[in-house]
Length: 107
Image (cartoon, rainbow, N blue to C red; front, side, top):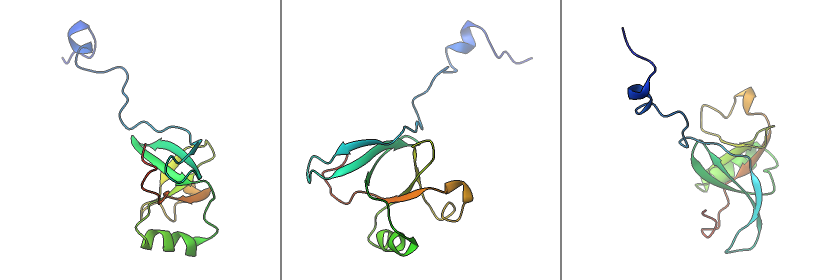
């Protein structure tokens, strides 16, 4: 029989974790260019995107071609990275934002 509780087991199984945390996007100001941005964590990775969403798919393709990541701002306010498997996912409906290009924006 495998033990799943008790003092010896609880030392090794964390009850809470801070890995892969996603947070709601918050308005911030880029310290380098002073433009408004949205900052959040997406699955534990800091994300900083332009405040203004991309107007269409062509603009998203142009941003990706420039080497910028793109994110969907979900209904719950979180940012979700748009990789090739998520581009056509209906669950990723929402405003699409490009990564903030200013190199002073890193958290």
